[in-house]
Image 1 (tube, one colour):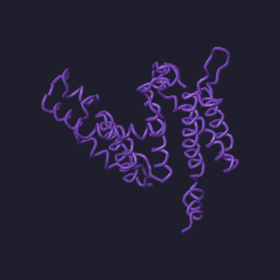
Image 2: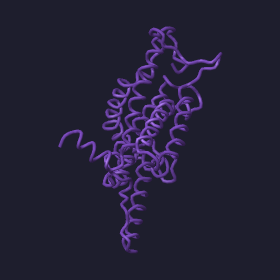
Image 3: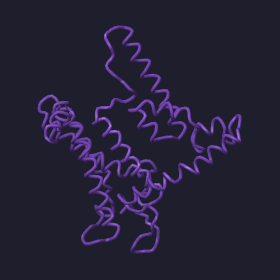
Image 4: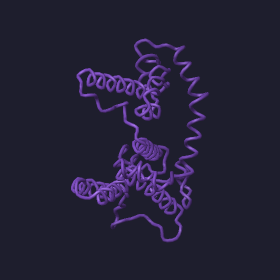
Length: 265
């Protein structure tokens, strides 16, 4: 099967062209934005911040405008033209990339773009891309399928949905974010995440076995810390290395002042 016929069958004929345009626009815009802000940070050529008078206009502002335009235009064109619907999905993806790239600013309500907290923005973009790609591949969240018309079929579908949702909540409360998110589409991972020991800094650990819990369990906490140190931290180091390769270092001083970067770009 050629690439063209595969694209026609799996993307266009299945009605996933708008989702495909969204994820492509999201990835391309995020990469372009990161290249742009790294050039601004290094003061290369004419690359500079966007300012109106004394006001520094963050690109999240443009992202919100594009998301509103793409979302409203998509509602209008959804039933009129598949091509225009795909175009509005791409516009929405551009806006979403600009907003998520400054997710940390929204979360902390201060400019933390190049600080340690700024890595939250990169995490948000990576999560959005991962979830959208899984949807594009045809996977359904929480194992949801269209229920059979019989009462038994409907109740079975609802019970599966509720069970997977409970497992997802437990997994996320145990601090296993990626397992929980991917597990929404691969429910077996939710069982693994819900059964295994919680991470030491997670809400589940604080409630059930960490110091300060109603019934602290030092041995369980020690095992959680040991697993975090031996297995989790090396994986996190690899993840940070990949993120910094794509988005730049978030803990370096400004290249021209020798002081920690206080503004976004």
